[in-house]
Length: 285
Image (cartoon, rainbow, N blue to C red; front, side):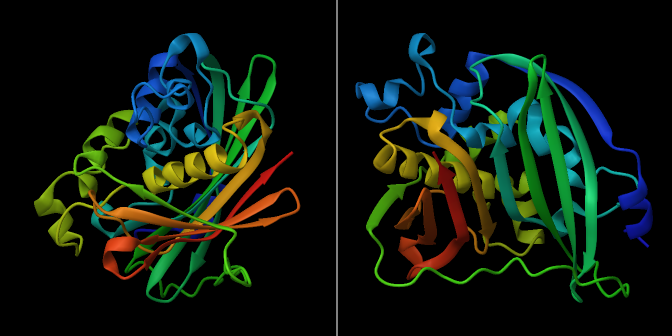
């Protein structure tokens, strides 16, 4: 069986040492659309090294992020076809602001393998610690089509109640036709996002944008409009990936304010508001 749930959960964690530089942060920010307009001071703080601050979503790609650990599927007990793999959810919890450069240790393990009938769902946690203590924790959910039906636990539901009432703000963020080609330089080289033939084998008409790219675009939009770009106030950011974006489409972001929490959704404006991100929450101080 391609997935041995008991072996995957019982396996020793994978421990890796990695580093990042301001150039890594700048490339990531450019990959999610920062730096436009190029003379806007609010954009230059994402791309100029003398004033650089780091969006918390950078944690998902630092040192290769999940891609550096095999995308969550290069673990004992897991042997699956990449054309069947989709990112289902992502959370980052900040223990302190991410510095523009650093060296850290990442400890990654599979925390759950669930049987969804037609698919398997993997929960993967990475804890990152710098020389001065914990930096961040990421939790990823990986959906593997065709690998369910093994009689395992269905696992907890990730669904949340949608926000009530009209949104407090609606934002639109266009993506570029080459967005995925730029974003993949931050470490996720899955050909699903670049190779048309591979995308067709995976069931898509053309390459799709990385879910984590949409994740970063939405976080930046929320931080810029609701927190005046002060990323040090962000404590956690989580979402469920419920649909795809094709490079060149526009993300429509709806935002609801509650006490120290923003709730968000993102849809593909070009395709009748097809869902992209749901159950999205940003907590801040």
